[in-house]
Image 1 (cartoon, rainbow, N blue to C red):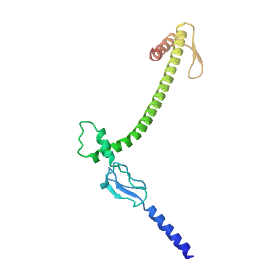
Image 2: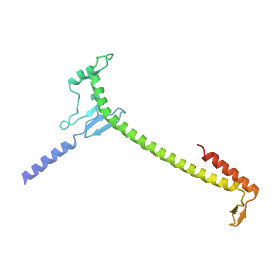
Image 3: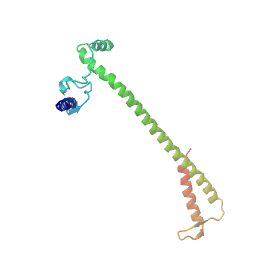
Image 4: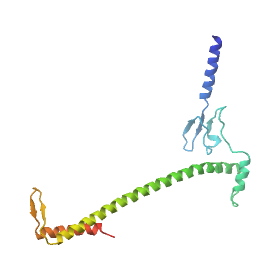
Length: 182
């Protein structure tokens, strides 16, 4: 039974050490961050508060990276701090993958918004064309001179006199002027 307790105690200790394996650092905004993963590359070593003694070490740039970064630097760039040049280059290459994905999502969202806007414009144009056709047909009917009748508020049918007919023609002309622009 003692062996069982010792094994259980050993497992519990290893588990406790694994749970304590956390990273702690201060981010660029001055906030303390706790994580089970290493911080981004743009966090300087001086802002690291705690690193696990085992597990995933923080990935740093290899010694050959400063030379490669200096070789890729523009001719006017100075090589005063080759180690400092490697970190932005690594961060830029990591960020460029995210930027490409972000740009792709942004382009897709813009395309969807443009398609939605185009569909709405087509819908409005179709409604205007339909209103235009109806207004032109109504204008032809009102200008024909045949007696027209309408239903009033009480539900009675009444014939339109000349003033009512002219008022309705003016209203129809306004609809034609606004919806039949082409």
